[in-house]
Image (cartoon, rainbow, N blue to C red; front, side, top):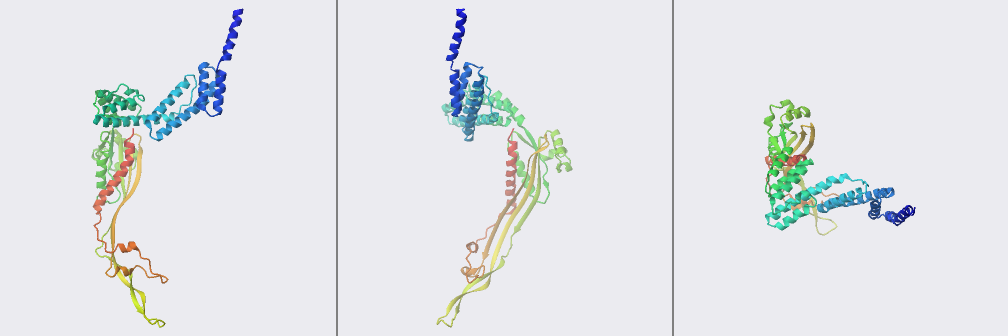
Length: 451
């Protein structure tokens, strides 16, 4: 009986010495002071001692989530400042904290919305590392290049065995990273990594095979349907079409295959090609392996050319001094008078106004990806005035309320200007076509350069 009584006495003695109650009080005190990180540490330590402490679990869940929110706020701040390496380290710290709390069976709310930002930051870091590697290797700065690899290895274990002393290991590491991106559905990012690495690293059978796989997954076959010329354009639409096709084909020559419109003449009837019905066009093109088509319509085209051979005659007023005798004054007085005169105005103008509508359609989904209307104009003008008399005495208007008119300096500056040749309408067509193409491709590239 002595031994049986001794055990419970020893057990209660150990419990009285347990730090659980002390940690709980300290954790609550820290929580009241809004020191959530320290409070969470106390609650965590309680659960290390006794995983069944329900109060500590609830407290750690509350404080741990507050700590995690604070940590991700720091991560978001680093991302906004483009401090990618620090942001990645912060994210990994957040992950370790989450797993640490999970080890005592407390499950925090993981903000998955930040996962994509983490992957993007890691991609940017790897991509920038590639750029810096190329520079260092070209300048024979091999120590610097080796340090670059060492810096990204902790964030991406694929690079753990890569070394500049064996460039093939670097080539394979970047190819494996590209493969990882491809498996995540980020084929275009994989393509970017491959293109950068192949520019200065030796290709391996693996990297070559992966490149073919990536290009195949990204390949887009696109056709520009015959442009609908709703108004006459003096050949403008031909210039626009040639410029568009040349530049569209050069956006991504590896992954964009431009199909000549002549190849689909037998596929689409004339009435279908010029219709706005997406479904029949998409179905017919998709059967022929074409994923995208671009429709363009010229809605407005107006040329304005003003080129008079003779200047217009305009009315003005010339000031002159006239002697006037006042009976009350012994000497004559000079009085300013005005007389009507003519001066010439020559105005030349070349102007083109154009409005174009276009849309890029995905044949598979039968939905427009990009649709827009753009209106632009190109103007060149010249205006000059001519006067045979004394320009200093010429006025546009008569005095009002015995006040001399203010002299319009801009008006006088245009007298006797040397005539200049205007930009021709044909040159304007070329410049306008380029502007339209630039704006179209700005829209299209957003889609064509994404996964």
